[in-house]
Length: 415
Ligand SMILES: Cc1cc2nc3c(=O)[nH]c(=O)nc-3n(C[C@H](O)[C@H](O)[C@H](O)COP(=O)(O)OP(=O)(O)OC[C@H]3O[C@@H](n4cnc5c(N)ncnc54)[C@H](O)[C@@H]3O)c2cc1C
Image 1 (spheres, rainbow, N blue to C red):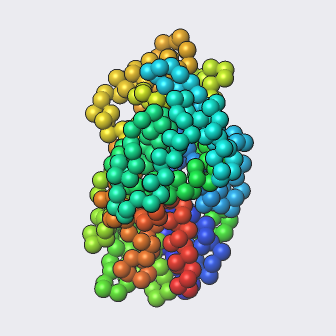
Image 2: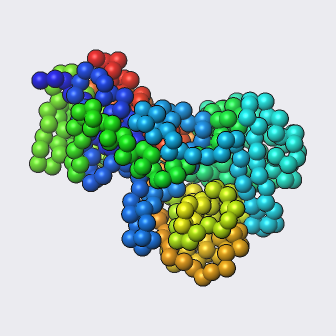
Image 3: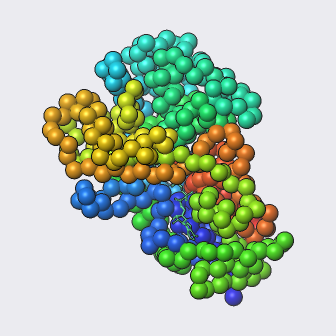
């Protein structure tokens, strides 16, 4: 029989691994416990709103090269849309000031010398305050690495790092923040154009990936929950899916691309992140007013980012553990009152949906950073993928895809 690679988990990490392995010598089988693929990055039909929405608003940056490679491979690179040049609209709810942050395209940050392109209330020198982050000691938090106060912190670095780390930035790992800086702002505006999947995450990432994989003969099995992994000191020997057990023959491999808590339950000896942070999304069925920016950063509000989609306004709140116990009605009303302030919409609360993802991502702290395992595990035929593995990035689409590509590269190197 042809040697096989079993990929468990059809989130972005598992799908990315499959995309890169699909042309190889071994046959590929994907096992997914849910009825659909995409994991934390997918769309669904919301019956309350009567429309298809994403499980969470997802923002990418143009420096996310692996995400773009994924999309090119499946022929949907046109699905990610954003401005030609980086710009970020902001409003401060306390002072009602509005501004447009406009980094210049190249690596030399000319924009910080232009008053109308930088954050109001800041001067050019303030921007060099982020430099110590790039040389921070291993294991340092952002607070230990740089000054986490002042106007620029409150109006740029705090919201940027909170969104990217999904962790209160002061306690976030400086190493992860530094990596983000190097891959985005430090490269200039060309690497930090904000991008969203205009027609939804599934249309951009998931549906075309499944179509591509099916055309390549990849066997994709849904409602297949991996319940146990049998391994000895050497290799993984068998995979149990409830009523079926699959033996791994010599030459076979397993790419485990499930979330961290599931990986920990299947392999108790594996180091994995132990603490997680919530994301709350609020959706309102109402047409955005004319001129509403596609993405608006909110300073000094409960809401942090306001997205304008056709027929819908949507809000993202990161590191949102404080809101998990608050009744949904209360959250919906509070955010709606802020949206009214920002948009000047004068109508009563429209149809809404609040989605609380309690364990949206692992906490991007130094303590969790050291618990992230490498692609290669203690078992030579078991490769790990997922946004929680040691990608050097926080838990993001980009990190998940890179982890899948890395697992595939390791499997190909073993052929
Ligand atoms: C609300 C929200 C907002 C976010 N916003 C952003 C953003 O703006 N930008 C960004 O870049 N990232 C964002 N992220 C993070 C991003 O969605 C994730 O990093 C990425 O989707 C993780 O992909 P993954 O493949 O590692 O894991 P998952 O998507 O969790 O995939 C794991 C898969 O394994 C399956 N599985 C689980 N157990 C088993 C089992 N026993 N057997 C078989 N299959 C199993 C699951 O069903 C799932 O399909 C956000 C996440 C959330 C939740």
